[in-house]
Length: 193
Image 1 (spheres, rainbow, N blue to C red):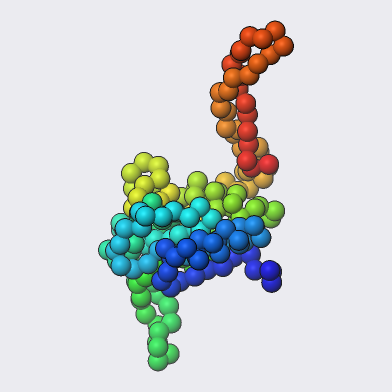
Image 2: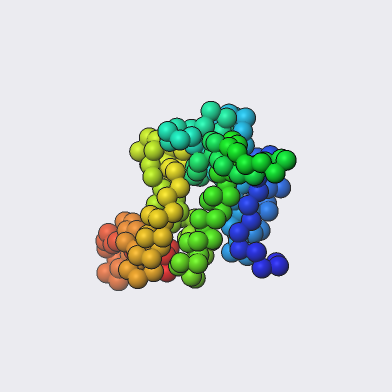
């Protein structure tokens, strides 16, 4: 309502119904709602809000960080172990948590929008997901979601989608024609346009 395009949340409560409701509302405003998965090594399999972009953490070996929550609700992962940042007392050092993974994804979404203007939030998130490095089981899985963030691949895919139509999704359907005989037709749909 006040012009934000991306909201990042790095604290607990990801499984709250109010969070899912807020995500659905923000989607109607074309706003990204990125949320840290949490640091309890818990399974997030009891919910999967489609409009909330939930981010887990990986370590330097591209393994799930031991503390990172996981499950079907996790959409994507990003580095979250030994992230160099400011610390209390004017110091710098490494720190762990999905609270550091989620802002990486939020930042990547911002860069993607800057490089490929005009994307909807849903399309931008799909580009981020499709361009992830698949580091777990093939395809989307319950540990890494769609995989680890790869901003370079996301920008390349976004730019390609901007200049080249994405391959349509073909689905078989049946329909009646004038002579009363049913025939099989392919219906092409493309949600990129």
